[in-house]
Structures are given as structure tokens and as C-alpha cells.
Image (cartoon, rainbow, N blue to C red; front, top):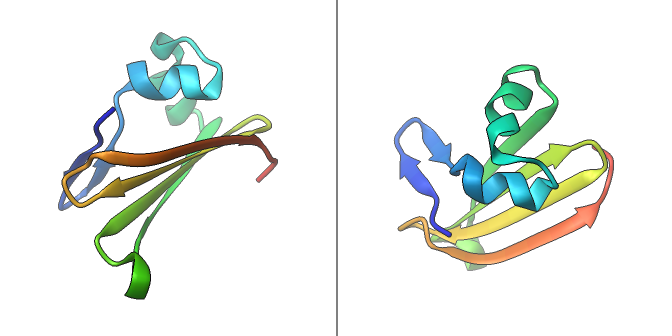
Length: 83
């Protein structure tokens, strides 16, 4: 999986994100526009410099992607967690 990183933010393909959230990829854009899927992006500092953490919440799921500055996903975690 690869994340597209631009000056305006990060993009994860719905075909990659949907299954991680337990959703059909076709449902991801609609749920994001409706605010049912929320996200947060953070840039690493100090020991985590050069890494980007993307967190997505949907229902009782939290998916976290750790990427390098080229958008390569280094680590993926999925847990049950309410926001």
C-alpha cells in the first residue's frame, strides 16, 4: 500500500482504506463526505522525524498508518476504539 503525499495533504486509495475499516471501497468517499469517517495527519518530530502518521476513525474502528516521506506504509494497525 502506498499513500500519496502532497503539499495539501495525504491521500489513501479507497480500495486500500475500505477493507481496513470493514467497508466496501465504493462506500468510503460518501462516508468521508458525510463525516462518518474522520481522519488526522501528523508529522513526526525528533526520533520520528521523516515519518507521517495517518489515523482514520469509523464507527468503533481506528486504523493507523505510519508512512515514510515517500508514502510507503511502514506499519498498519487496526483496533476497536471510539473517538
